[in-house]
Amino acid sequence: MRIMSHLSASQKTGAVPTRMPSTVQAFPFLDLRAQFASIRGEVIDAAARVLESQHFILGPEVEALEKEICQLTGCQYAIGCASGSDALILALTALEIGRGDEVITTPFTFIASAGSIARVGAKPVFADIDPQNFNISPDAIKKAITPRTKAIMPVHLFGFAADMSKIEEIAAARKLPIIEDAAQALGARYEGRALGSRGVMGCFSFFPSKNLGAAGDGGLVTTSDPQLADRLRILRVHGARKKYEYELIGMNSRLDALQAAILRVKLRHLDRWARARRENADRYRELFREFRLGSMVTAPIAPPRLSHVYNQFTIRVKDRDALREHLRGRGIPTEIYYPKPLHLQKAFAYLGHKPGDFPASEAASVEVLSLPIYPELSEAQQRSVVAAMADFDAE
Image 1 (tube, helix red, strand yellow):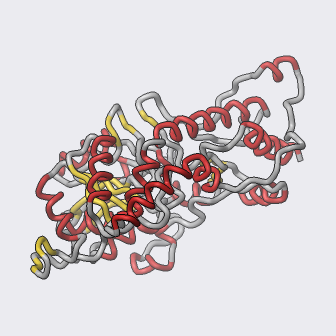
Image 2: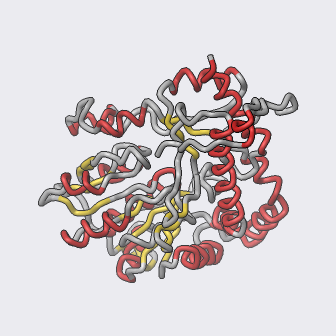
């Protein structure tokens, strides 16, 4: 939704907004070193604890993390695994989705969403996005359902909830399970409930750049279904409940104890980091008003019923590539999530899609630009970003 006109004090008086302070130095898009510096002792102690125990695969640290994630999400069960991509594959496999089945998801996301569907032998069926929030459109989901549809996989993109109430209505009417791809949305809420708890399963990633990032890969599936939880635990260890006795064809997807210990440290700080991200998002919006960029920038705004965790702060601008080059010249980092929607990727050419099939996703792919939003980002750094954008707008 577009930034609304709102005059700051400097605009009312005709004053020129303050430009980039000369003392601001170049900074990264995501500063994990700054995060580590703030919790270094806790992380080192946690890693040492695991090294002293010499218990590296699953075990007490993973079990403790799983319980803590249950407390955060309100789910009864959490099952750690090796990555967010594996979490999606495990969830689909637990539902026995495979060849001949279809799963509806969005084309405007990271490849793991649709890739996991293809990996289990099913067909990814794309439904276009709502251009206001980049998430899958419930109306598009309705149109994509066929007799072969076996599940719906909404993605809570950038830490912002998909319209779960409408999606749940659609799914309930057709008795379809929902697998939430919440890889970017740990800690986000929709109408008071945590994302990852709305569907039959929620899938999370602990890739280092996520709001809760490991020191490597890691993932987790949440559910409140005891039978699914049992299947997930078996599937992640080659389909075995007892050593060398295999009930299912599973996979090797176990969360390392070292990663779990580090994640447990970070989890204690997650709420504080989320608040800082929201404060930074609010500051960006105020700076856009101060620098009179309302006609240039469309910024994300979360309605009151949603709690956005801003894994990314993604704006829309018409002249995206030129703006990005201008910012790069000022030493200001940006990212593009995502420059080409999945239906136009070579990997999914076999689905037979062409340009124009999902216009909202295609329009977003040429306009989106993500700005630094990490908790340690300073006000001076944010002002330098927006001041540089204002200079571009004035050229």
